[in-house]
Image (cartoon, rainbow, N blue to C red):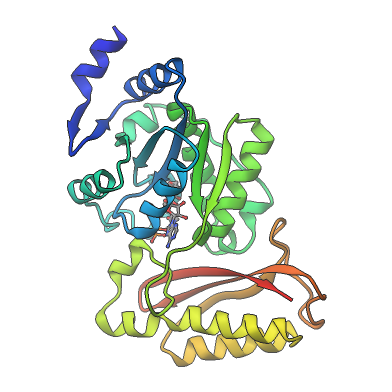
Length: 300
Ligand SMILES: Nc1ncnc2c1ncn2[C@@H]1O[C@H](COP(=O)(O)OP(=O)(O)OP(=O)(O)O)[C@@H](O)[C@H]1O
Ligand SMILES: CC(C)(CO)[C@@H](O)C(=O)[O-]
Ligand code: BAL
């Protein structure tokens, strides 16, 4: 029966196994585990770039089988956000996954992730309500809900998330801790273009002019991190960074802030960082209609 489901619903293309249903994925993972293999999981929304592929490579260091998922999750988009226009590039994505020898890709439908009448959600309170949660109040509830469901479908030993979405990584770590998922969560470092811009699927929305301006967000954060390491007041270093971002052509800043890396609570703005402190500098800003986020670690 398990074998039958697998044969009907999955095909092989460029050596990546394509799996579209929860039952197939669970059967496949169960078979691997029974054979003594270990499973790494990389959830994505597709339109893959080198950042995503680096997470597969990171998983491969730890496990013998890797599964990527591609699912544009309606529950994490608010009305008026870009759910309908979010880039969808299934064939290209599958070829990219093949190029890094990802074992399988999970491509569930909305009905597979949210069976009709589904009313069960996961809320990681507190962490979800700060920073991006202020500007996208629905967002981390949608992320936690879908990631919990994906974890139950994929049942991985290890899951890798990008540090680019730093708050998301912390929310997932907290959910895994609180609910006791037997999954090791690993953070993957942010892959950047030559000018420092963090790679992101939404960079595809930028016009050539906007793309030229976009590097300013990282440049401003990097400059602020150097000043902070030298003992500048956060209020001054962050204000200067905001000035650079606006001058480069960003139309609106949601935040440029210094936080505790674990709790994400804002640090005092009017005291220099303590010697030896390691904190996180996070920023979110709008370039035209595109919202870019980024973050870096700052050490004094
Ligand atoms: N530049 C990057 N380097 C490393 N990991 C990344 C990078 N960008 C995204 N990721 C990670 O890839 C995973 C899937 O993210 P997602 O599919 O939303 O891509 P994205 O590029 O962040 O898209 P978006 O533009 O919608 O934010 C997440 O864990 C995310 O943190
Ligand atoms: C983790 C995730 C795949 C959940 O939909 C998404 O938020 C993303 O791509 O970062
Ligand atoms: N990269 C996180 C997914 C999102 O912004 O919708």
